[in-house]
Image 1 (cartoon, rainbow, N blue to C red):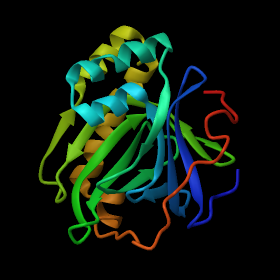
Image 2 (image 1 turned 90 degrees about the horizontal axis):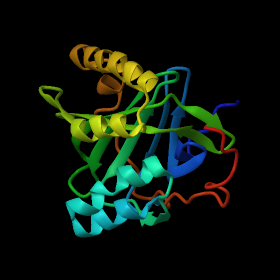
Image 3 (image 1 turned 135 degrees about the vertical axis):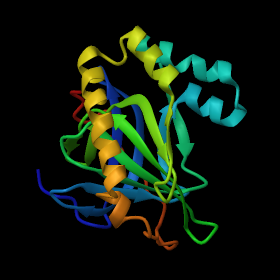
Image 4 (image 1 turned 60 degrees about the horizontal axis):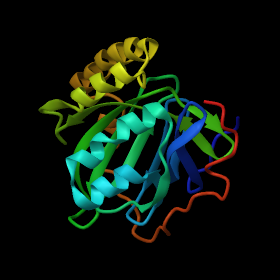
Amino acid sequence: MKSFEPGTTVVRRDVFRGKVWSTYALRVLEDTPDALVVACRPGAEVRAPTTWIEWLRTGEGAVRERALPDLAAGRWRLGPWTWRDAALLLWNPPGTWFSVNAFYDPFDGHRLRHWYVNFQRPLRRTAFGFDTFDLLLDLVIAPDLSEWSWKDEDEYAHGRRLGVVGEDDHRAVERARGQVLAMVANHEGPFAAWHSWRSDPSWPPTVLTADALTADLTS
């Protein structure tokens, strides 16, 4: 499949058992053999599980706790959401079980707040973007790479018990943990290239394609 041109809008979808779990409209920064790099600013269009949206609005832990059982049972519903508060960059290398994300504050000099590694299934490109599936475990890293901490390990363990994260997934994530920590230690990849990135305030909000929830669903 051909590369995406810088400046075009692509759609990232998390797909579980042939059904979209979430989808984001993103802007292409570059598409090279090393990585597909995309980004968004506040205002980007999102579709997400209604439990996740309710949790973001209320902060109620019991709401978030419903999300994984709903995912395992295939009974979630999607609702509209708008990305807010941060400029987000996603560095997606081909064939890996992770992406490296960076959160910047567009209202405070575009300061890098933190790096955020998302463990996920390898990208599968589509005609309008790419599909993956978030495997629940994350790594949060300080802007200067001086410290890091694992996030959502309890949720990851619960996902394994429910069958959301399979044994093949788990083994791949264990290998990916080491790969990511080596990159951090050596200041490689996005940790060297994208630290000082700035988004453009003139970008129009990225919008999902009309068929983002239905087209080419095979994951």
